Picture 1 (tube, rainbow, N blue to C red):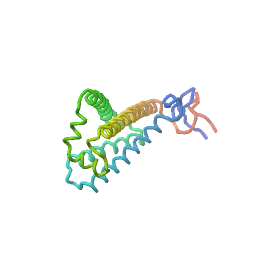
Picture 2: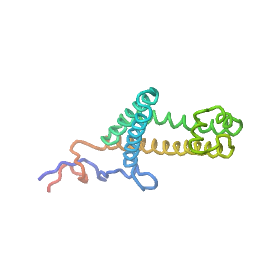
Picture 3: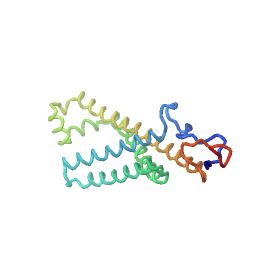
Picture 4: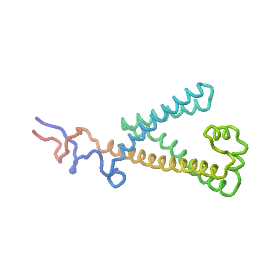
Amino acid sequence: MTVSRSYSPNGIIRPNPDYDLCCGLFHSTSAAKFFSIAFFASCLLISGVNFMWFGADKGWISLFCLFFTIYSSILVYGVFLEKPLCLLPCLVIQGIFTVFNFLFIIFLSLYGAFSDVIKEHHAANEPLRDLYKMHSLDPDNDKTQTIVSSAFLFSLIAIFFISTFSWYAIFRAMQCYKENQRTYLPGYQPDIVATNNSDYDI
């Protein structure tokens, strides 16, 4: 029997080790699949919580959930079906969000350190004060204000690092998919090591 094979002296290795992450601990495509599923699950969770708490009254939250659903669906489609063009808009949107998040962290850090905005915000924001009292906390206590504000800032920093790494993983996965498309020549069959011959008799 004659098997048609791609012309490649080194064979085709999948997944391509050139796109490994964290010193070969895992592959960029695996990381991209993980993040796409995580984003989609987060989208479902946020949408469900929004519907249970607010219904359809909060228009801007519903609009965000709709946008997030479209974004995560395109990401899942592009990652699992290896469609590089579908990943490009996701990279642009997530890149803009990551840059905005970084600038927001810098702004909050500097503005909070050199002004009394935290104390003023706690004094003027009634919903925030009610939230403190709901958990038996004193909204006028400086120590409590510092702890809560620091926790919020550290949460933003954690989101920034997760967003940055996920963006890089998706970007490397897109490069890997493009490389695969260039590598697959007419006659290529998955899981068969290529040889120098166009035909090989078994």
